[in-house]
Image (cartoon, rainbow, N blue to C red; front, side, top):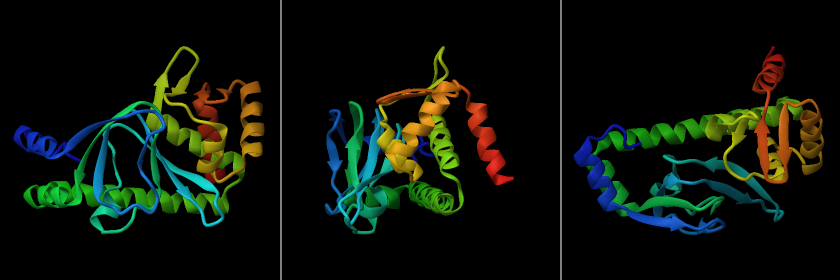
Amino acid sequence: MFDCLGEDGRRAVLEAGTLRKLPQGRTVFAQGDPGATCHTLLEGRVKIVQTRPDGGQSVIRFIGPGEMYGTVAALMDKPFPADAVAVVESLEIYWTVGVMRQLMAQYPEVAVRSTASAGARLFELQNRVGELTAEKVDVRIARALVRLVRQAGRRTPEGIEIDFPITRQELAELAGSTLHTVSRTLSAWDDREITASSRRHIVVRKLHVLLDLIEQSEG
């Protein structure tokens, strides 16, 4: 969001915010809290988790370094729609709503990029809703893994490792599936050496197989 600024602009943005370390498991903000702050992750990983009316929870997305979160709710004077929880030890910078509005007034390009970011996430959410209603579950799981690889993939001798701990339950929530189905699917893919997974660790060994599966579903 701040790539468009010069050195002086970036310094002003940093000086206006507050740096904060986030221990693993720390709740940055909770669903229903007043949207009073805008956040950017600098290091680590944060997950956005929404509690449904029935009391169940769903992982909506994972936030990586350089991404903003909580901004839309804050700027719209709405409560935060989900929890934000540090998956690993992380570092963030945050601003109060008033300060962020001043920065956007001073640097209009920041406001434009904020709008574009919110629009991109809306399109992503619409695509995911369409996938849930139209695609087979193995394709949805493949798509979720491909998104994670693109967001947080790290090449290792084994393959492309998702660089933060993720449980099969969290993957199931991302894919709109169940823990049983995801466990069964990953076990089958592990046997075929498409993936290598454990309780909180996933490596994609044959990305092209997942991409082919997605492509075939679109054809």
